[in-house]
Length: 175
Image (cartoon, rainbow, N blue to C red):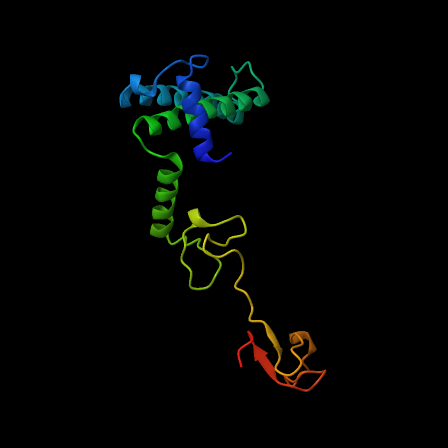
């Protein structure tokens, strides 16, 4: 699921009569922040308990697996409220996160850009294959063929002449 889809679903549930029935505009910034920080605090409390297990301090009644599940739940709750904080201020989560990610990446010298040489499209515009929205894959190699019989590059010998008719190379159909 994309950020935008999640944000739409999150707000819909927040405001729906069969959801929380809570208009995003009914709280101000500090109310939303308190809800977010409350969930982050619950996640921190679980992290504290996990640290106790790590350090051999007795007192926990839950297993590591139970604590890790609680941590995951609390982190998810914090994220859900964080998204609502962002929406309450009229921001788009994906836009602000990617903008900040790119600024910080540039600042520290982490330049993840399009794989096409000379293209500096930022990481937010890249597809999974590492190419940007302007390029749908690696740069296309020029189509090399024989000037005489128009056979493809695979028919050329080491001397650069066509193995079929001994013609020379014609690139991209240009004469």
